[in-house]
Image (cartoon, rainbow, N blue to C red; front, top):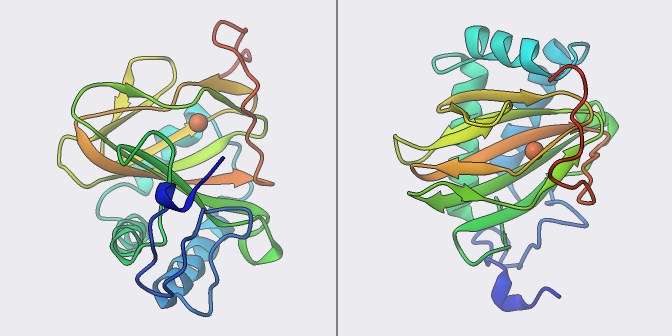
Length: 204
Ligand SMILES: [Fe+2]
């Protein structure tokens, strides 16, 4: 059960968002409005590309550091974290936080927006889960050495992107200090009933 102590108070609207089930109110959070606009523009470009290793390579080649979308996502997510509406739900104390930012709606082409914050110098594993329709994930380091794990296991990515194929499952893992995973899920689908050791799909 979530108590108020598990939540971060938002400096923008003074509420304790738990990141879900409602998402964050666009009208009271101007930085989120900018993030939502840029996310829609980005999603219009990638909406017909299937999540997975090929998309991960393409995103890192074409949308990595220096790309205006990437830079804006970093800016608005870090700003939102400071403002108190990003990754607001403490899952394992302050070192592993998560919060839903937007549910899937027509305004985001039915791709939910979520952020997970990690703060661990050592390799840290979060909650095991499966992506029924895949995932597009922007890796936003706060500390310069921050990295997020992609698949196959032990593939580490710093500032840039991971993308996991439909049906894949994994521990969300991070290392190297503080950073945020900002991700889009088609239809908002994520499942927490997958088990380590279950077969992965033929294509990652
Ligand atoms: Fe994941």
